[in-house]
Image (cartoon, rainbow, N blue to C red; front, side, top):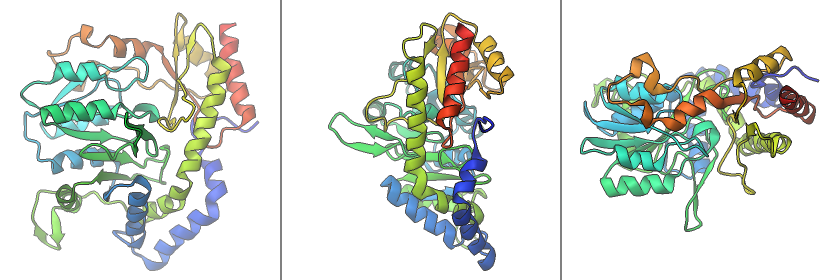
Amino acid sequence: MRKLQMVDLKSQYDKIKSTVDASIQEVLDTTTYINGPKVHEFQKSLEEYLGVKHVIPCANGTDALQIAMMGLGLQSGDEVITADFTFAATVEVIALLQLTPVLVDVDMVNMNISIEAIKKAITPKTKAIVPVHLFGRAANMEAIMQIANEHNLFVIEDNAQAIGANCRFSDGTKKKAGTIGHVGATSFFPSKNLGCYGDGGAIFTNDDALAHTIRGIVNHGMYVRYHHDVVGVNSRLDSIQAAVLNAKLPLLDSYNAARQNAARSYSKAFEGHKNIIAPTICAICDCHVFHQYTLRIIDADRNALMDHLQSKGIPCAIYYPIPLHAQKAYADVRYKEEDFPVTNQLVKEVISLPMHTELDTEQIKFITDSVLEFFN
């Protein structure tokens, strides 16, 4: 059996080595390292894949979130609602821009931001909602957009973990996660479903004026060289990373399908177990692209399970061990523990198993057998 890894980028690379290497070599041959043809090629290809008018590549996923908020013209003190159970980057950029983060609880079933919690958190100062498509599962964007429209709020989708996932609407239509709100942001960190070989990110929008503003922000506020029309930053996707992404984008659907198939195998093995709540997988399964495969461990010692798996050479992780409202950097007297019952429960129960495109039947059986062995 091949060595188990949380994410097996080497095996993935070996299968696409010739394509990736040739794409990178083009950049080296032309020396167009910044804003070169590969960047523009990737931008156009991703726009077509997502069905969105504008993709603006940038340096990383955190920048993508920050720049999206800058483009909307939010002002110091404006309240921005987001989920308590997620990675810190989501709330980090809100605080950096001197906006007021408003953390709310998540839904127990899908671990995404709670619709009812959003409704309760809205005040006259609320200006935006940032749903996170956590672990690869699309949030309830239909309900979120309805709330936003009723209260005249911006929606900024944090799509760092769910590129390629579909959001389905009650009228039967579907759209790609990240393209439904006023603006979306994603990360191309190497372990993402669509990852480069360094840092990278992108911003999505169907708003022409917003796209124009954002294109200036990512490049020092310039539209014409040395003419700074808006306050900007230096956040550009370099051409070598774009070359990698160009090679991998045509494979994204197959990569996501491989993750979904691995998730089905995992969940089938755990079906009906009294101590394990596995992710729900619908028949179509296009609303969840399994950036992570995360279990909830009930009435058992989650940390002891983690030790057991690691003793057998099985990597695993806890995403996330501390709620954002309990982090020193984001603590606030406004937050009461009773406002976060789901998040406070999840941080004690969740454990993520290896999830990537290269998992094989032998590996999955060894992992699932080892999990079940712990309970027996």
